[in-house]
Length: 138
Image 1 (tube, rainbow, N blue to C red):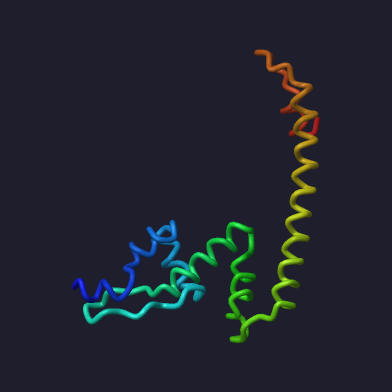
Image 2 (cartoon, helix red, strand yellow):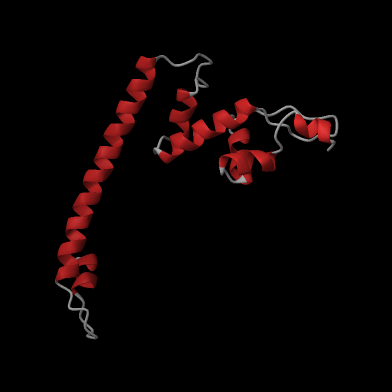
C-alpha cells in the first residue's frame, strides 16, 4: 500500500489498534452488517474512515453495556433503515434494564445459596462435603 493510499484512512489493523477491538471481531461485525464494508484501494486494501471507528466504538460500548446484537442493530437504525427516535431508544433501553435487573436478582439468589452452602463446609480433608451434597440435591 502506498503512503498516499494509507493517508486516506485506516487499515483494519489500524482500526483494531485505535478502538481496542480484535481484528476477527471487526470482520464479524462487517459480516453481520453492523459495520459497513469499507471502500478498497486499487490494490484491494480495505480503508476505514473515521466514521467506521466511531461506529465501531459505539458497537463496542453497547456490547459492554450488555446490549444484544439485535438491539444494537435497532439502535443503529439497521432494522428498518430508519434512524431510531429517542422514544425507540428509551424503550429498548428500558427492556434491557429490566433484563439486567432480573439477572442481578438471579445472581443475588445464587450468591445467597452459595454463601450458605460454603459456610456449612469445613474445608477439611474428609470424604463428605456439604457443597457437593447441596449441588447433587442431597
